[in-house]
Image 1 (cartoon, rainbow, N blue to C red):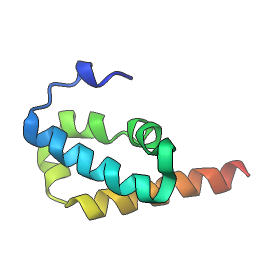
Image 2 (spheres, one colour):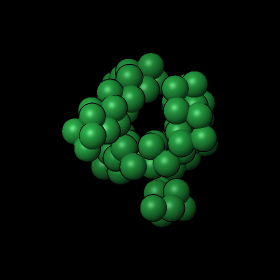
Image 3 (cartoon, rainbow, N blue to C red):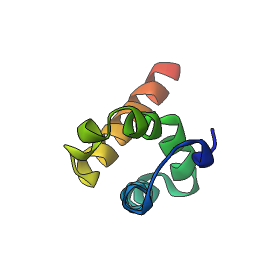
Length: 75
């Protein structure tokens, strides 16, 4: 998945980078891949009102919980 295929503006990128920075606190260097695989970028393109209805902290927790849940299922 490449970020270039998503029509995002500067504010979208700031929002995404803030989420990525917060994910780095939990996942380190894996944060970027986890974010890309989370589906958030697709959701932002398809339904930006839904994404912006929640703040960055919400999305960090949601992505973190979904990732950890998937990891526990695979273990």
